Structure formats: C-alpha cells, structure tokens
Image 1 (cartoon, rainbow, N blue to C red):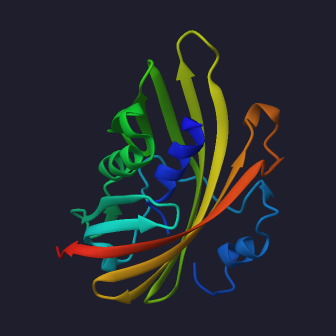
Image 2 (cartoon, rainbow, N blue to C red):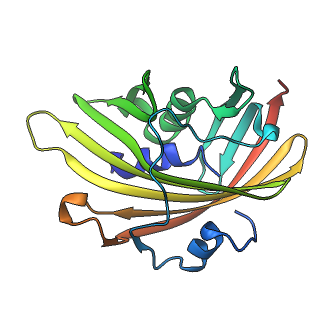
Length: 212
C-alpha cells in the first residue's frame, strides 16, 4: 500500500488541457493504458520544468482529502521547478502519517528520490519517462513514469511502475486547478510492455499562500 501511495505523492507534483499532442492522445486512451508509453527517458540532470506562474508557495487540496503546502522555486537559470523532497514529505505525511519518516533527493540526480518509512522500509523512486506540453499560456500538461523499488528487511524488493498524467490550468494569479490520472503497472521484470493493474483519477486545487 505504501508503494502506491508514495507514487501518488510524487505524482501530485506534476501537471492537461485540450490539445492534439501526444499527452492529449494518451488521455483519450484512459483508462485502458498500456506500456510502453510515449515518454522519452529524461537526461540525468533534467528536472520537470513548470510554467512561471507556478512559482511560490501553495496550499494543495485534492478530491481524496489530501491537504498540504507545496513549493515551486526558480533556479539560477530561471527555470521553475518543484521542491520535490519537501513537497513529497508534506503530501506523504498527509497520506501516510507517521509511516513516512524522511524524503531525500538524490543530490546528483533530480529524477531520483529516497523515502525512509517505518519498519526499516525504503522506497527508491526513479523517473524513467517524462513528457510535458504547454497548449496555451494558462495550461500545462505533464506525464511521468516512475520505477519504484520498496526495500524491506532482507526480503526481495517489491518493484512497480507508476504513470501519472496531470493537467493544470491557471484560473487566476492565486489559484490553479488540476486533474490527474494515474495508473499502476507491474515490475519491468515481467516485460517492458504491460497493462495497467489499477487506476484512479483525482481533482486538485492550488491556492496561493505567498508570492515569490
């Protein structure tokens, strides 16, 4: 259960709107998703870049009852990115409570995170595919496929893949709405191709706390 929930955690930091790009076509296939997905593998140093209107601090709420503060900051090169570890920690504690002890970014790779859980469990999450689109200045689409390894004691790791396709729309300077579609697949050890084993859809709302 922790694996799928942490998939949701990382996923909530993503962002669809009507456009005839690969991600809109992907959405039309929902919920009958299959792998491989049309998601190129990110380069080791590449992070998910958001529109400039994401910059700042936000109160996130979702249709499944999650509430947490999330942050998006501008890098030295001017690109806006999510504070992945802090955001995952805030959302993860809202979902998992005391089960989630710590979330760390890999300092050498923005596409990898380690989450330390209770009972000596560690969730290693790596982004293996990503695509984003900007249909218009007030809409943003992104899809990420993550490989998740849940290590627990001396047992073999549990491996799964989580795909999250998200859509954000800027309603005003202090409000962003979103929808999110997520699917879980089995281990790549069963083959690179695969059919979604479970799926869910969420509605999201971001209310600005402070401006940059």
